[in-house]
Length: 368
Image (tube, rainbow, N blue to C red; front, side, top):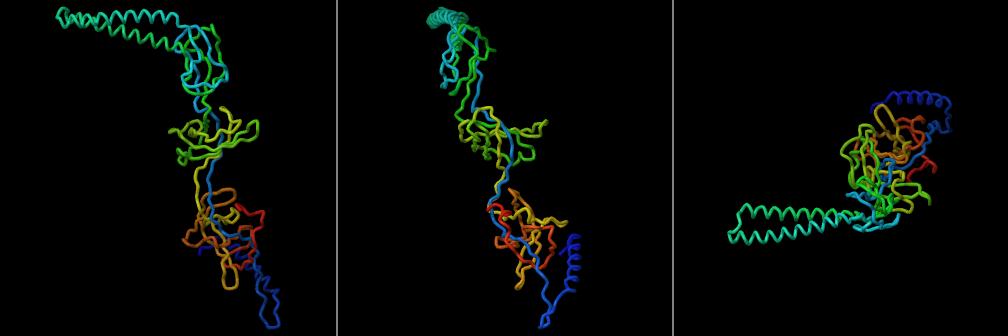
């Protein structure tokens, strides 16, 4: 086994200590010397746990749908048919614009279309009797089509004098009153669908590969009644990285709608990136970092004694003071193994040293 400079230093120290201790040994009546003292250590068993890799972010709550209502045509407001804060349903009429002039034009268009229909019927009869030229018949059909298009256009314009709700929701404050003249640039009110909430946040570029549609998260926000919590899942990940923030826009649906959650609120997000189930874990304090890589100090039985064995490991996820460990050599570690969990790196330890294991103090136990 390759021994690092650190271990050489420790061995030298122990050799000096051994010489000092040897000079002070006492012999018993039977003759043999008393055995060297064992090194007291605090140990804990390796455990299998589910570890979660998560990322703490911030975001903003938003309504499921939100729209600013405007008129498509200009005109004078005849009536406002909603109260601020009302819940409205899809296609409910909210505002009526004066349509007297358009209805007069519509009546004129209907008369023109009726005349064009009569002329078309006459031309068809005359064409069958070969009493009308083909050119004249084509002109009559064109006039009929034009009159029909003009009628359809005016019907659409009349329909647009009624401003309707595009979806179910809650209307906000209104900016108009009956008698006001409005144009396409006039914002009449806002409409928000609060049947469920969305949340918008940014994920740093190095984590975007771990985020996908369906990734779960937890939302926390301060409300007038205290901290509110809810869960949700991602439904959108931007395909580009923002050059100014080096992050990607992510959106998710909030599954519940706790009391006090409102669009526009600031919220904390705990995004779950990965879940490792049933992995071997040890406290972070049990990891010994050496030039050869991270190692664990395992307590092995050697006859009647308990001795230290150094086992190289590969580190994985970390969560709340726990670390996922995978032995470099297969089938070396299991849940029955005890590891030195306190004082690693400060105690004088080397492979084969005799140990006096003691349970890890309760205040240092994690995940129990």
